[in-house]
Image (cartoon, rainbow, N blue to C red; front, side):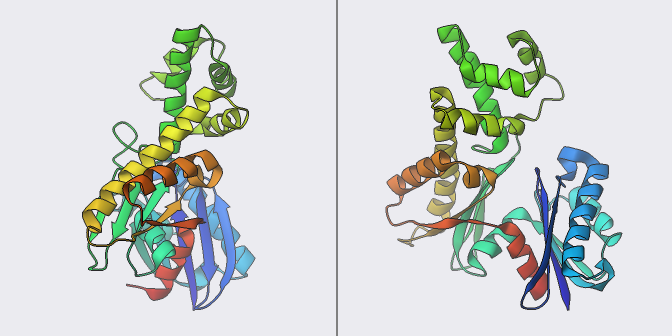
Length: 299
């Protein structure tokens, strides 16, 4: 039988096609978070990623027996209904829609206990203990939550750059931001950042990483704060789920962790200061592997 796992994220979509034991093909495309990018772009991203994966595996979408897709906000009926309808146009067989936390936890720990912290465009911490109880922290949306995420980092970088300008009369980080967003002045940045439809702050993450690597103190401080904020939501889940567990396991997932050593270092430091016995997995978890495994198992 042929199975399909999909990780539909706010920045990209990844797919794996496999049989009962092996990965046969993979594909990737643009974002498929329907709330962020709309139905048209979501359909295109899903279709492109599926076609790539099926092409690499030399199978037709009609041969797929079961699909599992992980999406942020999948618990909301309006999101899961759109995803199910779109996928029914593209693949055959059963389709299971679950949260991105579900596939990430499966990729990290299988059916076992542990805590995962996702830091991509958005962020969230999610865990399961030995009794099967689950708990989340964060991930309540860009406007009020998602601390340490790509969006949060971009917005924090703009805030810090403007503060630096106020204090010192100049800000090298601000110049990088203006160039990236193709703006001419501070005043144009103020208008763009405060628009009714706000800019995509997550697009600033690469420049924050580059500025940090170049020694920009403001950028470094933003990334250090992101690591501490991500540790904070992990601590909430650990303290509520693992009160009797001296060595809880924690895994990381998402592009922020993948691309920033500084974020990881401060995440480790802050988490271990609160839980000395915590076991932090070194490898960054690839959620799509969990989606494929759940597709293999079925409901």
